[in-house]
Length: 292
Image (cartoon, rainbow, N blue to C red):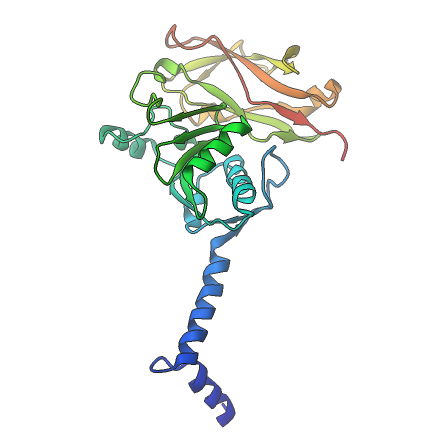
């Protein structure tokens, strides 16, 4: 190292009594933390009705582990719309294991028996510079998801059916989800293309086993359009656990003659563990794009 280089090093990186050194260290640390806080995801870009620019600014990216791509895209969308992408998100609670969720319930915490945290489809979070009330009110008008507000700094957001609540209307301590009363079907994506499989799963189940009728109805613009079988086995497919509830697929090739319309899946149940379980449910809407 030349004397000139040594001089630069001693001038800019002194740790004691070095104003320039401290300034440079702070500058480099700030740049490092900025890039550390920006999480880029592109694998599922353009597959959801609500998505941002694919650059989610988050202070604890490890909390994204286990979260569904749909939820991450929705968080990215809210961040872009409410803070122009500048309001760093901090996730307070993301994916929960069944054991962890049950422990929260035993402690009297706000944890539902059929919580979508168990599926990686829910997050409690704060957004820098944006109040919880503003986030709650904005997400409500999207009519796309579940959003809860407890008059603190954070909101609950999930990708279940559209609904909203606060601490006065929350039913987490009731039997609202027992006997599979809140069971729901959700597709992997909102937007599909020819050559793909329409993948969906059953969520918010609290009792196993239960059965799904092999023949499902494809709804187009709210009306029954056609019937499709899920496999070539019996008329009732028995689901024994959460893992088995994630394994359903329909080839898009069976749906291509429906035109550019909005679809959903109507699923009927068999071998129900309780009469309180609904006879059928309707999935979230989705579309099939046949032309770019």
